[in-house]
Image (cartoon, rainbow, N blue to C red; front, top):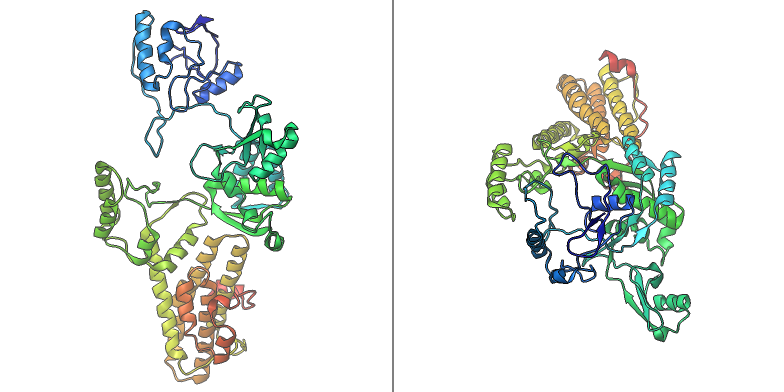
Length: 548
């Protein structure tokens, strides 16, 4: 043991692998109540935990300080640290002061230095709930796409600890707990026996009256000021959105849902909590499938940040913006002058001509194309612009076809395969292949493969090959052959637009409305969004696919 210089208390001398003996003297003072690592060390060695700060950051009275050092009581933390050095010097115990680098936690809002303090909190036991969540994935009841994230799921669930659900914040759902005091007993806020949990004060009083067998007139209940962890509140979303538990009419109809789509970075923080809470409270998983998308970064792979000037506003990509306006908006951010100049240089380098107008269809299509990546997405605006050019290609191809559709009305897709050419059969086979890939990909939530199939059909198969092959026919004089070619073109445009619609809703709707259906068609199907998605087209010919 060693004796504390300021109070009648002895220190235990211990050895622990967390201490680097090559750093400094190789010996450190352990403060279990004011450092997370020290807290773990203290638990391993059963050290006494002592809190020296109150909520205002002042030294507390309960430290058994010697008479000569009681001036520390009530002193602010930073003043106390300076005073400690002065006192050690007077006792000739101070050896030397050496600077070294270490991380100081800073509050993101107030910029004040954070002082770790151990406080009583509310916890939820998670082990059993986590085991149920593990089993839901293992038995296939709950599926995660891409399945590579299942490893992360099992890691978190199998190594889960009790969940602290209380927060000392001004905003959030208040913890439904009440502290009970009475003239007939002494209450201790750190003892859970003097707390009751209830949905309201009246209900809490009823519970306390029965628990302590004391008249409600002799009880005083105080609602805990702590609020629930954000992830606890949001973890109840699958239940609360349907009125559970007060009104279960919608809950009985719609729960459980089918698909949850979210970012992979909150798989544990949000998704796992929803599954655990829902299974615990209802016995049912909240959804059957989890689709995880990647995190969008800039084209250099950097996290988007105001200080870097690399934030990409979707509206700017859709509508376009000049470099001058980009920099003007950057100046409105509350960032340091030096960081502002650095950010402006970054914008000049990345967007010398500003961001071109790409439209929402191109942006939507681009993000779906990126979705096949298991890593983060390095979003390149030039790629979005490339898909805007793809939109132009579709528009021009459709307009080319419309020029020949003017005097025709196509009602059905009945074809006599004995009367159509090999090129006609080939393009229908390619259309069938694209439809097959799209539907298979949708079942697997593989949007990237679906977009590739549609892109290849429109750009390479239909525009580059088939349209060029029928131009001589359309400019010839054989009306029967022209009529067949027009029908094939009509089928390709109609089905091609419907295949593309989930990814590019606006351009496909605009072109679909210009297709020469008869009037009764639009009475039954007024919009492409309510038309049937192509399914099981029977025009596939793998031999033609290989030979042409």
